[in-house]
Image (cartoon, rainbow, N blue to C red; front, side, top):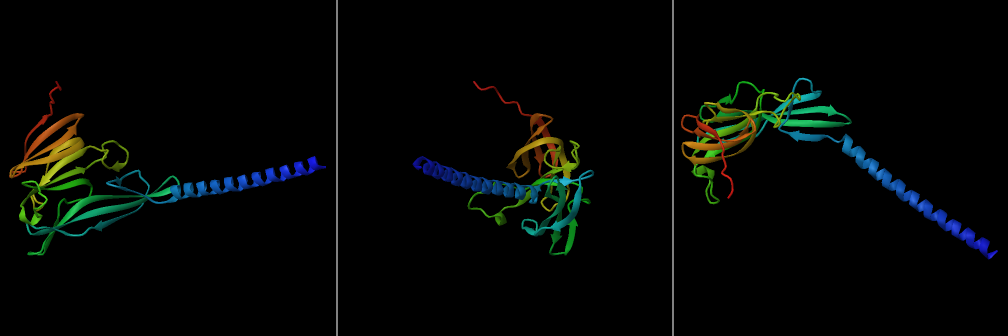
Length: 235
C-alpha cells in the first residue's frame, strides 16, 4: 500500500515537472517567434543608397534639409535627400541618400543647384580650411578654401543600386559651390585629405587596387599631380 501511494506521489510530481517544463518551453518559443516576427517585419533603413532600374521601389520622395551658413562667402547651403521605400523578402526597407545641394544668396535672393540633375549620390562633403581647425578657433574666423566631394555617378557593379560599393569620383568646388570639377574617377576607396596650405590639398584614395595620393590646386581647382604611394620596407 505504501509503495502504491509512493508511486502515485512520484508520478504526480513528475507530471507537474513535465507540465511546468512544457509551459516554460512554450513561453520561450512564443517569445522567440515574436522577436523573429518583429525582426522580419520591421522597416530597415540604410543610408547613402539609391535603388535604380530593376529595384522594386514602392515610393520615392525628395526632402530638402536645413540651410546652413557658409559664412566665409555669405551664402546658405542645404542638401537634397532622396528617401525610398521598397519591399524585400518579408520586411520593408527604406533607403536615403544626398543627391544634390542648393545654394541661396540672402543678398540677391538668388538660388542655384550644385549640379543640374539629381542622378548621383554624394557620400561625403568636406569644407576645406587652412590651417586645420584648433579647439579654440571658430569657423567664423577662418576662410573656406573650397569643398571636397566624394560621389557615385553610375552603377559600376551592376547591382541596380548607387552606393559606396560602386566606383567613386573625387570632385572639388569653390567655396561658394561654383566651378564644380571632377579631379579623379574610378576610385575604390577614399582615405582622407590634408590641407597643406592655402592653395593645396592632398587627397588619398585607392584606385584600381593601388594606393594613391594626389595634389589639388585650390586656386585653380585643378589636379597638380597624382602618383601611387610607395612605402619603404620596414627595417
